[in-house]
Image 1 (cartoon, helix red, strand yellow):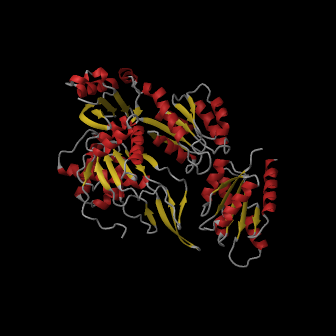
Image 2 (cartoon, chains in turn red, brown):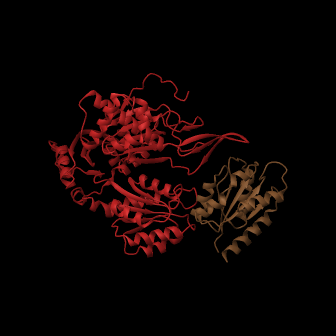
Image 3 (spheres, chains in turn purple, cyan):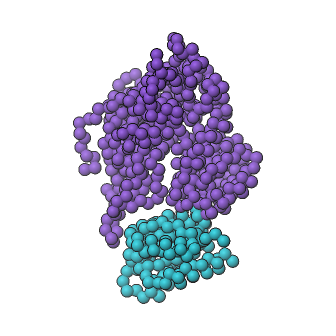
Length: 475
Length: 139
């Protein structure tokens, strides 16, 4: 056989997945997939199982020679606590930096950290505390205060300082002896976002300091390669697809699991024009949001509460179906491995998924409001415009198994209650399911083989036939 | 000494952008570090920008006659947000109609603005006052 074998392994929180690929010139072809439960006590065991299974019976795969690329989101993924000054500026940018680096924001604080906040921080035990605040040369009082408060704690976390550059040395002095790394200010000027340097430092911190604590060092030794956090690899794959593949210039990817829903978009955030104005931060072209309260299992109760209005709009709140849905939610949040065996259970899961997709899209996308001024009507945009997104991929357990696009099309949420407000969500995207779970496995290979991985990821998708032309929900 | 930072913008539902650009260019040239928020700026946006950048002054423009209602409460909000000593300037066509400027000035000063300017002013004079006010605050 010509070409080169590559093994890609994704150690997830529940399953460890492996895919054996053949790289033939510029083409990556999937030869086989294997899935084993993640062995939480010793991640290396599940990893070795998958590796052995994937390579079993391959005469050419006398294992040792096949390079193994791997990533991990096990043990809660990369947990980041974000600290900023004002909620709408540095804290908002700090969140963006954290999620773009593949992290999950477990806590966020603005202004001065108080004793309660410190106790909360210690309780959630983040892997990284991202400390920001102030523009370069701007406010330093609050960030210095927060550095001093962090110095009081016994947090073992890596502290990443990416705030006001003017006091970087003083912050380093205050936090001397701690596991401190620094990066350029995430917001050097009001309204200017510069998250790439912080992202890069988070990536390195993950490799250098966190991999070990997640029990991954055994796998590093076995493969001779360091892992990436899964969402970071996916983030980069989304970028590669958007930048390199014709027809994918504006697209989005939703990765939904039992606990979280991740939304990735690749599209210009603001298009300008004569009578439209952007207020607030100009968001990046490539954006990821992580919704820790939207998920089909662990987060089902939270979802049921926060999206109550949605469920009530789909089922009669006094009816028997609604009561059954409530029971379903209670059950799946207890038995997180539960897979419904009957139609009703599957229908309920579909409804939960629809609620996640809808809410994640509304939170990821911005809004435009019609404002009437003495100079005439203006549209004021806040957040990111997703209307040009014309392709949408569903990934992760439930979405990967879709056979029609209805659940994904929930992104095209109807208008807000206020007739002068519109959500900037996709309008009628073509939908795809990542039915072979290739996205994370190929994301893994994208750093080294970007073109081949991007092409294979897209070629492996299952198109979900669009329904007959739907009526325009905007009326 | 580093250039003093000032926050500039047109408040409320006001889209007049020409004067805003002139002020930005002028004050930058005059040695200030201008954080220009553009048009249709809310009170919170002015204050967020001033907090993050540790600005010495907020210069609020209003050209469409609704300045009084748009600026009301800005001083109190600034105090609540920890910007007790910040300088607040207002200027432009602040109110509709033929109200004498002295009366407009008094109303804005009552609301906590440090200086109030009519639509036509010498920018050199404004910059000089701003520099003096910032120095006085620093003492």
